[in-house]
Image 1 (cartoon, rainbow, N blue to C red):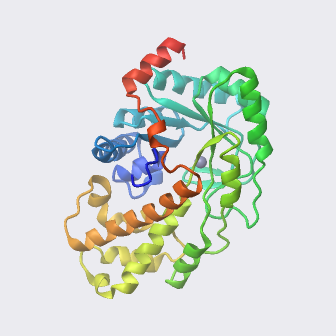
Image 2 (cartoon, protein in one colour):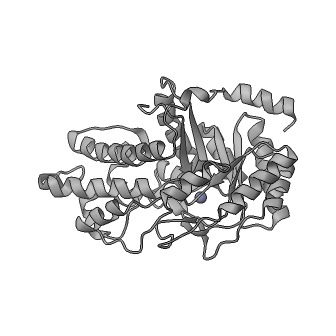
Image 3 (cartoon, protein in one colour):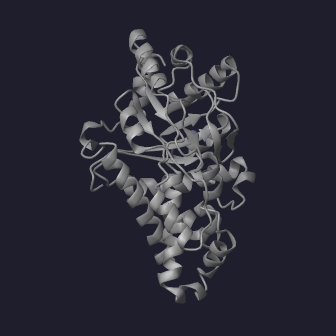
Length: 347
Ligand SMILES: [Zn+2]
């Protein structure tokens, strides 16, 4: 809020399951996801309604129509349907179906074309297949999506390779083709964490064991942000910063290691030195995770670790990506009004 930048908060499909109370979130049912989506949306609404900046809540990597319906039912204002592992025609068909459902409710939709390498919740591919710019144009036309994630060299997870180079030509060509065809739409860069090396070193100095963790260079992301990429997805950096803060807390305040409500978190940190997904460490405080209850001061210290981690990473990138002060330029539109606009446009 201090930066006056608009905000897009993302919850992935499996994050909804976790927030629905499934610590084994990979096994989450549709009911779990609905419950979690509602918890997330309620938390976001609580702050967004009184916030002077526009806030969107977006589902990342929805895997099917049901996942998108669960998110929308909970209160998400935007969804991604990831049909990138399907053949082109089937991807179009699935995405089109989600667009129809979502737009009727004023919810925006992101699709994906081309395959990113790496792992992100249930999304996994060993190799990438770059997006064909001409297919991207066809995809926008045939599906009516608002945004499209392209594959152009970025990678999910913390192990992106030491000297990853983004194929920016793909973004440029796609945007150029869209301009020629009169297509409005947002291009999205997934797998774009920068994996700050200082945070990785700090985690390892605090008992962590993380290796070969390299991200995308900020300079490359700054460059593509001027070349048609309008949304840059960052997740790993936040996970790393929160993990570092948790490790630091228990090092600096050893008496907390024995406190009843949070000693379980310390034990999980000890048992999982190579983990940096906060969902590994937070199961002992699921009531706080799901509903925001902070019953004692010790749990308050954990919440503070999370908040500071988010602020450090997101604040840095808002500045780096030149988003400071842009909030007033973004029109905040209600779902009803968006539904009306989609109806008028016939999409
Ligand atoms: Zn992604």
